[in-house]
Length: 138
Image (cartoon, rainbow, N blue to C red):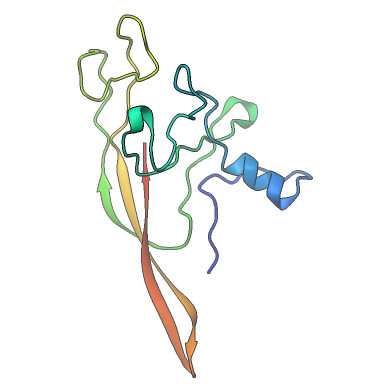
């Protein structure tokens, strides 16, 4: 089974470990007064459940890299994102790092699910396959 990070920056002369650190980089922002990174897993702000890790695309020449599937698969679900609104009272326009008057910080609710199937060995001469799912969101 071959799995890849969702962002594939140039390898340059990096070791595999250094390249993975770049490809899977978390945002630098932390919750005020803590060392907790934005989008930590499994707990995030205020000890709330958070179902994934935020990672951030590198920006060669100021351009974000495209998001890629972690493995070959079939898209089985798509939720198109709500168009951004400027109203700071909109539920998707929250800013957990803002401790002053409310400011807009749009959170996308776009979401896809991909079904992957791969062989993981064999029982005698009969291949053993598994199906798993990956999700990519905001």
